Image 1 (cartoon, rainbow, N blue to C red):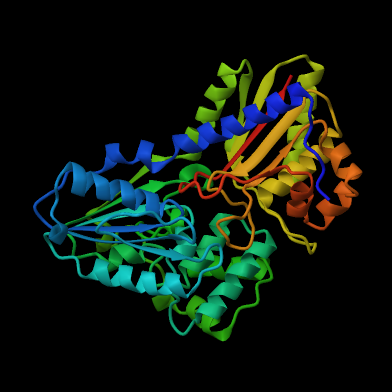
Image 2: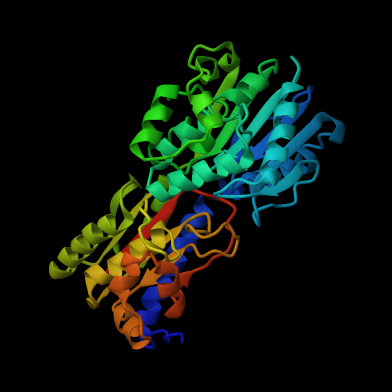
Length: 437
């Protein structure tokens, strides 16, 4: 049974506005808009293009058009490979496109990463390496170190995700179990004339060492950090991982390593860029934008409760505002349901607002998927308004019980309020907007 959508024109208008605001936020961070101005002019030497992440395909496509169509660079001067999440590939002539698993890596990612490392290692003193990075690259570029198997790496990733660990902790562990993360790609390409990394940030505070696990920058995290995270989060490690985390020779390269002497790094799109686009769209619609931060972290349901409090205060004061926030929230999974941080935030928000009139919100991941099981069709988030709880209860749902069971996907699917834009081919983290008034 699916509950009917609200028919009141005011509710419908507000919901349509929220969807359009999200669309503008996503468009602001797409490589079509943010990449071309940063691509270096072609040079006489060979150009090696390596891309990874949810925007890996779209970044490669933009770069391919730039060099081949606009500048006429011959095919024999470009070598390229890009790997993106399944369903996120895009045609990029001259650059081999591979689709691989996310958030849990798969065999396709392993083969693509082996090839990327081999291409990087082939770089000579006349070759320039262009690395195109975005969120999701940590799972797409997967090269287990030592005797660690893919199945073991998958199990560690799943355990870290279920523990509620933030992305910086997850990546600190993954970097010390990998042959490409934590600056190791730069080491592989150390004989190149130059290494330029252009990155779309999806992490709080835009830390290059965290974006896609920092394959081309010095790694500030250590083996000791990785061990401490696993212990604190209760992660059971196989012997192969324990050996890697206890081996001083397996430490990641640090600042001052010669591999970084000719390496440059630029962030070309940030979460704040998407949020500012959302703020401008809300302003045009007559709302006063109130920015709550682009790098929020914490439990999704707890952040939602705080944002509901702010929305109710604004309503009580008679303000017409748009509360806008980004970052990467987490969910500590205790139930058996399906969902993701944005859907859980939206469900908790609906419960905290308790049907308050004049307030509606949307929460979605700008990459087009929120949690899920790794399919490109997974939902990106949820939409709530004053009718959400009533429609859910009319459909036989118990909203509080479903929140407790981490079952937000079924909740929003039943009432027809899943946000499902499909693959956006970019990723600047979460976008949450609450309209008041």
